[in-house]
Length: 388
Image (cartoon, rainbow, N blue to C red; front, side, top):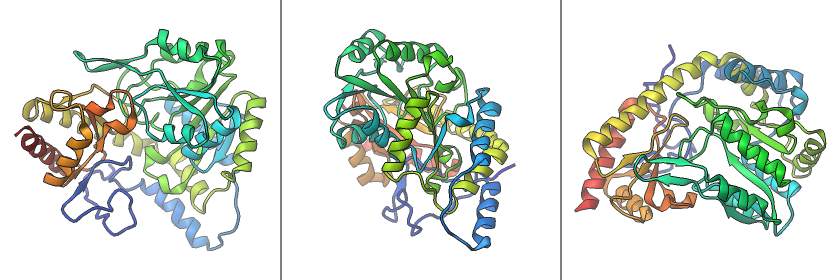
């Protein structure tokens, strides 16, 4: 049994998440308030105790650990020669945008979606073209408008699509059928498909996560898949990610970008930390998933009983809960600011994710149950005060 109950004091530790006022409770940025698995910590301690910290690069054992992880956890078998090391999913996305599209091109996304996608597109001189997800106000479920997506991909200026699988912030797990349709459309219109799968391990229901690279090889010859242990194991500071590109020519193009942009050199702990995570982290992850599932249900039950004005979007992926506040406001920027000022609870306003996000809040529930209970009570108080 691993420890998912202890409160770990993180103030004054250079934590981005916990750089807040003394009375504030941060439940915004996507990192967890759980210690990393002890197996990972042990591997990193061994590396530090070795005491020589020169230049390093990953070798076969690193890539084999990634392949074995996906084979055991997700019944998918990526070839190790498809893999490239990179210092993070976000820099990999930005580098890929520069390599496989041109200035002025459209990059298709599905809003509301992870806000950094916008930065990677706009900051590199490309245009965001969103095929917004369709939202059913009755069931609170999101789906893909495939007719609209095809129209956006068919635009001659559309050369790339960035997919989020599972989807952040709405917590949607795309089915194998969904992914197959997306891949076929991208092939049909010669659009490079990049899939950010950083939350893929954090699925606790059906449909299960399907890695894009597990589709038939004919469908993934224009695909780039980015994975990382950072969300799964709460090791964002390791700066380790794997970029999986089945097509050799595309892989060489992406690799040139990674090297040209100087994104390929790992930090001291990236290699041993990642290998330990992927070879020894299976049981820790199994218990983490149960904790997140429990926390998610706790939010659903609490809101149904105490905050009926908020609807929790049904989800079984990620530790990020998407809260429909449309009964209260169509400006959750103001709501988020109000709640933080009145209660100290710091969540994310949904507007930064685009689409209909201006009616939503995003809440990080990857924390001990006692901390989550505190956050929910603050949320209830904030909503009550806002309604008055």
